[in-house]
Image (cartoon, rainbow, N blue to C red):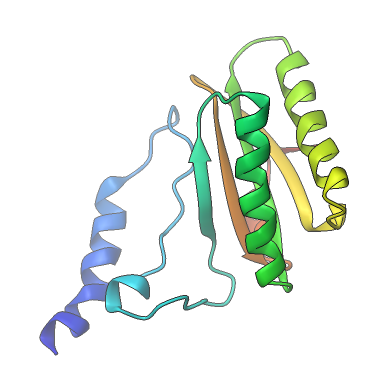
Length: 148
């Protein structure tokens, strides 16, 4: 019973101790419900990262997106956010190509494009993060990032 009382405090202190530098991608809090043994708990407005990956082939990207779209179908009141961390530099060709691949795949699967929001920021590497939020809450977390 004591561990259940101290778990939220532990996670809060752990998240604070991790900190964040300007060179790191955004770090969002993880839900503590799974750590407490509560399965599939959803805290109002709490972000849930579904997947994170680096460079992938087109077919691997489509497979990851299929899983993400299936997850969003199971949560109809959620919006999917795709965060593209792209290499710092003047070229937007990679972003444009990746956004087009994602949009085309969403259209091929006949998924509502209004439920997928793609944002990007510059970073020292290339990664993609797939997040789901209750509708209306994602804009707070991704304020200031470029929308596509």
